[in-house]
Length: 443
Image (tube, rainbow, N blue to C red; front, top):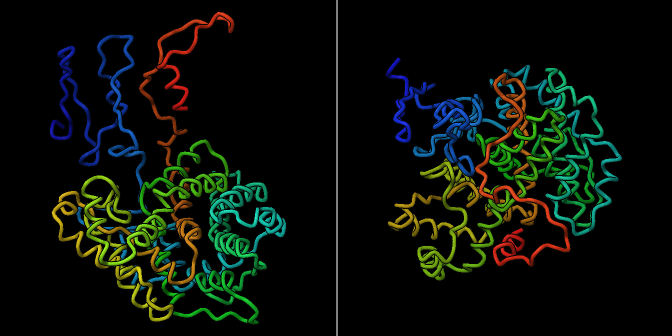
C-alpha cells in the first residue's frame, strides 16, 4: 500500500499525511482537505487556473499523449481512421464505443439522415438574423432554440431519449450550418439531399445553385470527411468542458451544445485557424518570414497555428492535413498561402527557439488553408469545426450523465477581495480612492 500513496508533511504543523494514489499518477483533490492547521480551517486546496493539471473526469473516448504526438479515438489511431474510415463511421465509434458492422452502420447512417431536416419555424427563426450576422452567432442561437422544439430531450436519464437527441443533433448540425452560410450570402436555403453522403449533402446545401441535382466533387467530399474525422473529439478541450459543465446542472443537451458552440466561437479555440490564416496573409510572401520569426522571438507577436496546450510534439492531425492539402489543390487550384506556410514551418522547426519551446504546427495551421481553398469565408471556419465536434460533445455529455461521481460543476475560489465592510448612506460616502477607480475600470 505504501507504494501507492503520497506522503505529505505539513511544515506548518509537523503533521504527516498519506494520500492514496489512484490509477498510477492521480490523487483526489478532496483528499487535500484533511490537511489543516486548526479545526476551523477549511483545509488545503489546489490552485489550478485553466485546469492545466487537474483531471475533472474519467473518460473512455479520446486518448492523447502530447509528448509523443498520439491521438486515438476509443483506442484507434487517428492516422488509421483518417485513411480508412469516414466521418459517420467515426461518429458511431465515438458515440457508441465500437466500430459498427455493415448492418449497424447502414442503420446508423439512415437514422442520422432522417433527422437532417429542420422545422420550418427554425428556418424562419434564422431568417430573422441580420444579413451580415456572423454564421457562428447564428449557429449558437439556433442550436439553443432547438431546445424549445424537443421538450422530450429533458429526459436526460433515459437511454433512448439520449440516443434520439444525439441522432437529431448530428443530423441537423450540417443543415443549420449551411442555412447560416446561405443567409450571409443572400441565397435561398437548400434542403438536405439524403441520397448524398453526410459530407456530400453538406456541400450540396452550401453550394448548390440552379442545377437539379448537385454532384459533389469526390476529392472535396473526401477532404471534408477527413477534416471532420480529425475534429470529431479532442479530450477535455474548452468546448467539451463547457458541454460537461453546463450538462452537470442537467438541462437538455441542446442547451449544453449551445454552450459548447459558444466556447468554440472564441479565437483561441474554433477560431484559431482563422487567426493562422490572417497571420499568413499578413506575412504576404516567403521573403517576409524572417521578420515575423524575429518578432515572435522578441515577444512582439505570437506564431498562430503553432503550439498547443496538449501537444508538445508535432500535432498528428497537422501531418495528415499537410498531405491532404495537395490533393485539394488539384481540384481548387493552389492556395498561395501554402508556400508561406510550408516555408514558415521549415524555418521554425530548425530554429532552436521553437524547438526548445516545443512549438510545432497544430491542426489549425493547415485546416484554414484547405477551407479557404474550398471557397469558405473565414467566418465559416468555426462553424465547420462545430459540425463534426457535435459527435464528440454528445459522447462527452452522455458519459458525464452516466458517471455516478459527477455532480454539478462548482469550482472553488481563492477570495482576494476586501474584508468585511459596513454599509454607509449614499450622501456620506467618500470619493472613490485611486484603487477603487482601478477596480471600476477593470470591470
